[in-house]
Image (cartoon, rainbow, N blue to C red):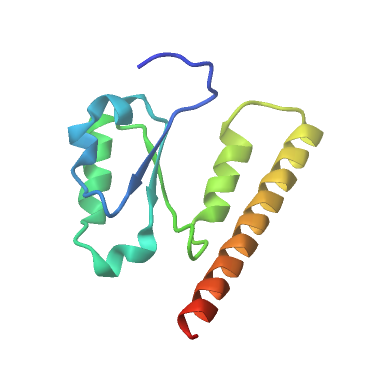
Length: 127
């Protein structure tokens, strides 16, 4: 609703929330340049109509871009990083490369942290 000085607005919708959210919160989706459909790895386990959700978002905002993402599996992460690198701002080439490298390093660190946490949980549950 307010301009906060951001380069872009991104709406993040988890598939566990239901596909009706673009109609329930139209202002958020109308203002967003991108909708990230998160937790797509859970699609086999939840009732969520992917095509309907995208259709509803595009009814509210015909220009909205959509990226399907799973932070758990990494699916869509390259698309998200590419979007960030190419759609947000116009830094000089060397700045963009440095930002992309920093993002990739951060993602790698988060993945390592997640693997470590999963291993700790697995070893704790087996004892």
